[in-house]
Image 1 (cartoon, rainbow, N blue to C red):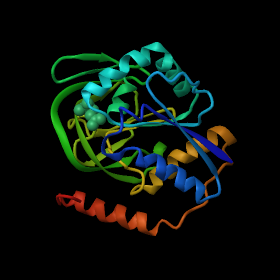
Image 2: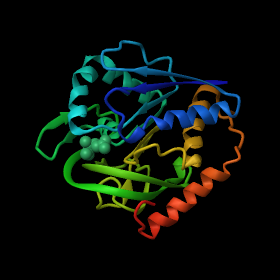
Image 3: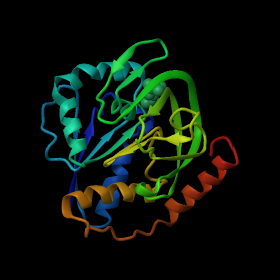
Length: 248
Ligand code: GLN
């Protein structure tokens, strides 16, 4: 088996080492003898998205999000939407997550019309920044995720759109309704900056499974890995976050 991963806009959307998520995904595949091929697609690159199984889009600041708009409108946006409807797997972080919604209106009032691949919108407000934790919805595996959020955008999901999870500590989508991120088809949008996956191995494997099963059918399973270190890291951080410790 093999998976092809596409890292979209690595030159502009890569805050806090978000790209570490790709290293984590490819390592977890290679430990199981599954081939992994990663391509980077930058602004202006014209390569078709048809070939890929899993897409990664990292976070960026307001300015960087604005810079992308022309490239999205020149064709990539339509291709991304088609890949979403085709059930391909997407992990989208913060600014990359906001990009999948209808629009982002910054704190200063600049409105970026985004893809509308998923029914939600984002408006700038007071900054939400801290370590946080959430529980994934059952349809996304149900495990707990620990992460770090830093966004001024408040995201509001459309009626009937499922969040990725429920906030245990922190702000998540907007600090108001207890939701975090979005899950639509195989799009996983989250405010959790990176790399979020190494310390949340169940979430990492859940993503990989959606991509493998789409390509190879529901029988495609992942062998368990000895995740002792990863789980210890996860549990320690979760305990610290829930107890409100700084630097958890
Ligand atoms: N510019 C967006 C916000 O502040 C995204 C930030 C980010 O990706 N960290 O809401």
